Image 1 (cartoon, rainbow, N blue to C red):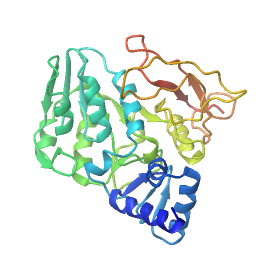
Image 2: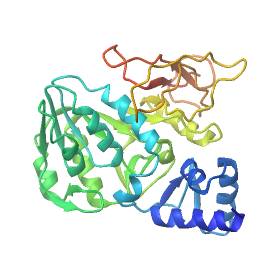
Image 3: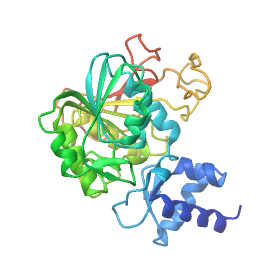
Image 4: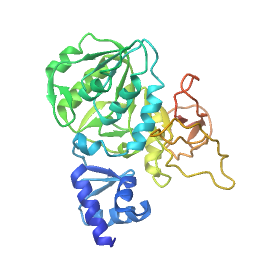
Length: 336
């Protein structure tokens, strides 16, 4: 495929979806991420799109929200790995809230196996994923249906959450930065997400690397209210995305990085490979235990000397062994 044809196809994908990862662009145009990155830079120079951490977005600074059909096909491996880890955080008998989104829908599919669970949600897709789980009670909010993401929004949804108290909220969004936290492109969705946050003792954000550094119009969860972030490992070239993760960790957010199988394989002199048991057809490829060097910004916690991001490697474990499945590492606050 000639460069002009590639760039036209890239432009069409970004216009259709609002935001597309470099990984996905490379897969569709059947070339390397290095070539795609060069094409994206050329299109940015013409003012046709903007580069973001690990992807490209529509020009204008704030990305518009894509519809569910478009988002459902983006970063699917990353969302699967994130959902695997997030499901491992949920315990039997808990009461939680789960917001709308394609990543939270993946989480809901895994929650169907947790006995005694109560899930409060404004998402029809989350409720559908749990509809046949006999051991899970699903509580829907009221509200007006927003067709683009199959979510209930508006005053009815917000009022139904008043007086509610649960252990955790699991939320996704359109963008995540260390400065503003989680944000979304729709005012009604943002308002309901804020009500979900108010109902929870802890807030867990599920966001793949393409959302890191992306800032959209309406803030839903400021960084000081995010208890934990579950994400995937940014590509090795995306140092800015890694720095964003470190900045969040420096603010006290517990950052857990899930393996997707897209990382650089161990080479000579690198970390020793470990085989992980297969989880069956369709299961995500899990990363072996290893340390992921994440360059980061200077932290805010005066905790002594040292430099560089500190990542605690965590071995893979099967469900029930005390660790969320698919987890490869936790990012610690930077010491200085």
